[in-house]
View 1 (spheres, one colour):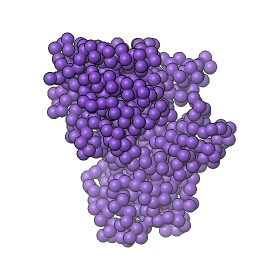
View 2 (cartoon, chains in turn red, yellow):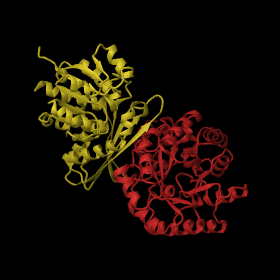
View 3 (tube, rainbow over the protein chains, first blue to last red):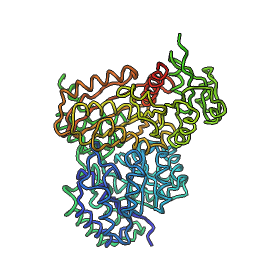
View 4 (cartoon, rainbow over the protein chains, first blue to last red):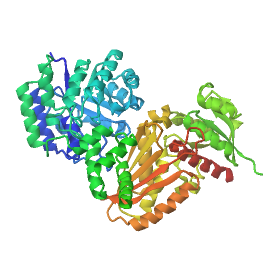
Length: 337
Length: 287
């Protein structure tokens, strides 16, 4: 019996790493292999979730509906999950079609201090019989007390669990220990954790979260995700099992799943490059990395300067439009000096 | 001296209370009743401190005393306005709706104020709509083949009250609808972010467009004219990124500083929709 629930976010967070260009063939192939590996939940879609295909954060190669239907056709026991951020995705135009495509698990996300925008989407998903989680993104930007207060709201809306995301990969194990412990002691529902590896803490933070009482962990094959990637799924499963927990996932099968991901999904294996270290240090959402690199080249400015300026402005996911404004200001400044 | 138009404000949240302060400054409008649900709320206290008559009876306050006003600003929520609209129509009240209920004619003063004054119920779209529609309209004036327009607004968390938060889906639908209608583009998308940073950030709106053959020179001229028109009633409306082509898409960015009437100046989102509503109501008063 599994006592740690693994959510595989390869086909959602990994979208960031390939500018949301996953094809239906790739989705079908990975979903089939995930089913064979006994993965309990796979999350599929645009990196910023349902309804997020846009000029702001990048357009998906294929529609949400097609991605989800294709994944669903290849799943039986593995559940199909989605990520939705109110403000990007809406009930009528996004959630309803996703339900038609056969979604089982809905994770409704907001910036870590804004849980009340998830109320209607959580309730609607519960009313439609879905398994529903609340997600707080960019959790390094709020105090433990504030996070508890926000999670209690999600619990009251009907969330069956909450997942804290270290979206900027900015946190260290000591932060995770106090954050997760605070939630576990205050909530009735299970607590989960989603890591990014920008400062090399992906697996360490996930292990710390479990030791503090988290029972849901996100991972992605080969770490395929935004910035320096997520907690590497196959390592995560191996380490969690080594610690004496059970995930219900077959080791050989998940190693093979990761090999398949490397061959079929990844353009490059995620690594901790200069941009991701600066993203982690400045506490800026990992999904900004590709946009910052692109705009920095166009404006001939240092991407690291852009990241630190974004950090100073305390931007949240969804404020990618500021990158161009900041690059233009830096360009003028550089030309003067 | 002409008689001021008697108006009532329905809804005592951030929007309603900011609106009240603006009405008190207007030479054409007089607030005869400020209506909410709870006399102890912050907005109510503010109204009382300004010497304005208040009621906690919601729409019943107008049903029971229909002569109290000629025009009603509805600053409640989209769901509530759906209920209020029919009642106010039966009572023969003009309505300026600040919720994203989309019942009345959509009004963005810089673009279509005069046309709107022939309707009994006008809808002020959304804060993001008020900031972006003038820009989207200018894009549509310069180009015939606008494939797609996307508007992204970010507002300070503190400026978004409970109704704004519950109405986030309506915000998106109403803003997208307005962008399509006013620009003539084939497809539109709206995105809204809340940012909790302290000190609070100013409201900011970015418009992206996919256009086959963008004419940036002509577009810049039209955008400048539009920005001037909006500034005539929203003084804190400023162009921060003039039209640029970035990765094949046109991008324009504005930032809106509020007048600091109720919340501080970061709440440009309150200011832009309320300034637009005041201009519209003054338009009726001048008829």
